[in-house]
Length: 145
Image (cartoon, rainbow, N blue to C red; front, side, top):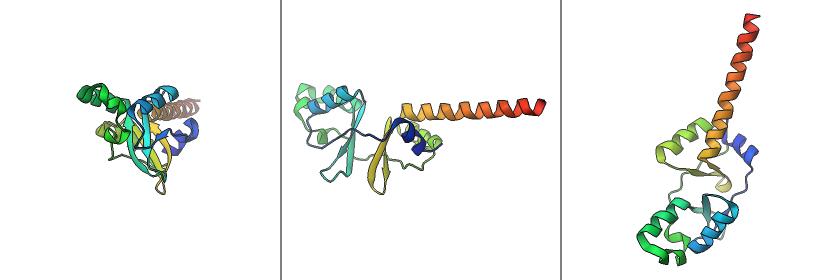
């Protein structure tokens, strides 16, 4: 199974923000879309970072309520781990686990084309394992008849 299979199922819409968006604006976007991460892009649409609920909570602990007025650029992760549509879901699951990444932007030719979460990857992997199990059961039943 490839990342493109996951995107085909979930869609390729990605909620983005600019680096100048306030943390309060970010929280509004997260709540409105019921998501845990937003990809940060520059004015040209190029990927420049990612910011998650976890980033907000950790920085709130450090800086207090004044953080709410700060720009997203101050709390976003700039060394973003990305994948491509052709990448294998199992390999991406391993990378996400090893690097403790819950959200991974999908890029193609330098452009943002989707976002997968660890939940999407796990769901895809489960579907893959269920399909393999069904194929084995059919093979076994045919072989014993």
